[in-house]
Image: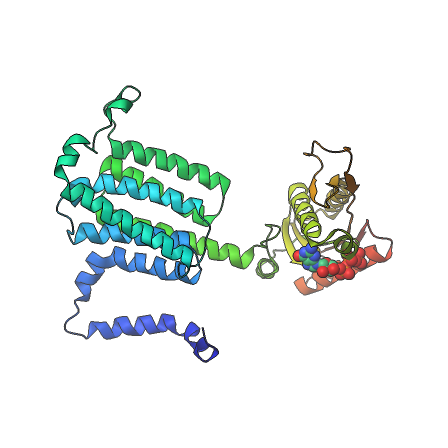
Length: 397
Ligand SMILES: Nc1nc2c(ncn2[C@@H]2O[C@H](COP(=O)(O)OP(=O)(O)OP(=O)(O)O)[C@@H](O)[C@H]2O)c(=O)[nH]1
């Protein structure tokens, strides 16, 4: 967006509100019918607009697809659409699985152009096949299972039911392969289509619920963007700031900093440095009771609720040791792999790297109450740990 239009970013929502208010007074627009009949369209358009803003082509394509089916059904574009709806829905479910397999990119790109062209070609081809080629349907009745499948499955299954079941299983598998709010949204839509095919849900319900699911997945994705560190998967510094707004009465803050990280980066490259950051984040998450945040660079903060300071220090000391003894192996090429899972440990051409961390911890108590003060105290303790030779834990007195 050009810089002179930047201000639009802050007024588009009040702009929509004013447009809707103005529409109340336009005689040729009947908003009552718009709200009741077109609610799914409004919600799906919202999902589409937001996903375009987020460059989430997967949600954008899913919104477009559901909108296409909804509009075609409501406006009776195709004479047999209502009877063929389960078939269309099951094919939409297959499409959702394909979307879930792809990576998010902008729809305004060659990639987006390919997907949209494919979607249009598929819709037109399917509509022509189902609506115009009646003789073909006599030969291949798409509602029932093909003969070759009847031997394996009971006849009570219709083809759309089978396809929607397989798609839902596929979407579930993809949720495990690429976990995240978007995959979860697409899987939920797949489940919705599965139910719609099996128990004939009304099209208004399908459109509205699908839009709500897609919008919720977008909100989840935006939360992840704002509050999660992309590299390590732990919460971000912004999330820590929010956490410290309501920290509670009894808590401690530990700052964990990787030792000589610059040297590691310089010697083995940034990719190895990134892997080390991921390893440390994973170890902290696994071995502490608190919440882990990446504070910046090679520094992590742990928010540990509870009173027992000594117990927390023992656990943090154990964490420091676990990280120091964690075997990370470097291949001759310089690429890191997980030593504990690596079968090549000790093989020729591999070398182990030991990573250590220094930890500073401060507990909230009578004379140290403000969250900023506690954070500063933990930082001072960390500085002490660094000065005392690193790879150790220091507690703010
Ligand atoms: N690979 C990688 N490096 C990062 C990242 N963020 C910051 N760094 C590097 O982290 C290094 C931090 O170095 P320093 O602050 O000097 O700390 P250090 O070398 O660990 O020294 P001590 O803390 O005193 O032991 C810099 O070289 C940064 O480039 C990141 O996301 N990935």
